[in-house]
Amino acid sequence: MIFRVRATRLATIKRVTIAAPGMKPYSGQPQREEDGPMKKALLVGSIAVVIFVYGVAVGYYQFPPFNIMRIAKQQLRLEEALEPWLGSFRWREGPIDVAMLGDSITAEGGWAELFPEIKILNLGLAGDTSAGLLNRLGDVVDRKPRMVFLMIGVNDFLMDIPLELVAAHIQFIASRLAENGILPVVQSTLYVSNDVGKEINGRIKALNSLLREWCTEKAIIYVDLNNALSVNDALLSRFSYDGRHLNGEAYVVWREVIKDYVQRPPLGP
Image 1 (cartoon, one colour):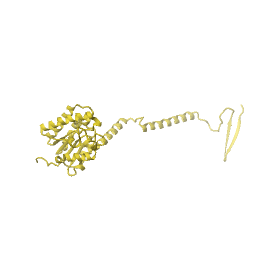
Image 2 (cartoon, rainbow, N blue to C red):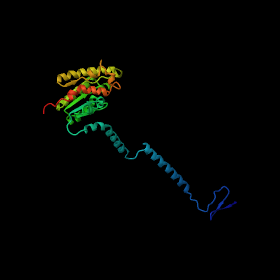
Image 3 (cartoon, rainbow, N blue to C red):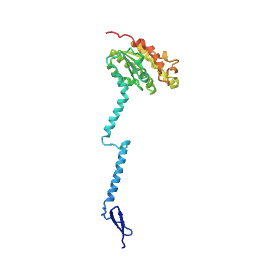
């Protein structure tokens, strides 16, 4: 076997490298056989850590307490979503004069600005139905308002809830308020534009007819908002921005229709 000797001078340090043909040079230091596998293991481990950290960041991997974290996060989101409604209950200290109860049509009204002299609470909730109002009724009663203006029904009909059931819900709500010493004012369910739902307007008309008759029988105040905001059983386009919800002009008209009831002095001591 023939060896080559190569001398390399680097600064003042000499290093002799001896190598045979087809063999790696010998640097004068012993080679550790495990260096190769260890380096590979460290590389693979580093890559695995990077992939795992990335997976956690994007939500693909989960730590053991992930379910607890997920539930807490969902609870936080729920509280944030309900904050506008929950905040309305914390809005003012002391007794409330009037509460406006309904769905998004009620919720979008600036009632505190429309009636600045009255302690008025906006309990409208977007997407609510007559069944939803029943679920919230206990909270409304606990606030002990002097008077509650009630309007609901459009979302029920969009969900094909039977007309008779919607009427029964509204009647029960009004009766429960009266039983608790709160004056209920049943407002007619507003029509939508014919472009949004002509068939729905037919059901709204039938509901309002049932409610008007029932209120007369039970000596409960009934206010027909459609006389001022609709014509030919359809919401006037100049009072809406989408055929269902009201614009600012419509709420001013609404205020004029109910102001005499809102400003009515309390009955009894």
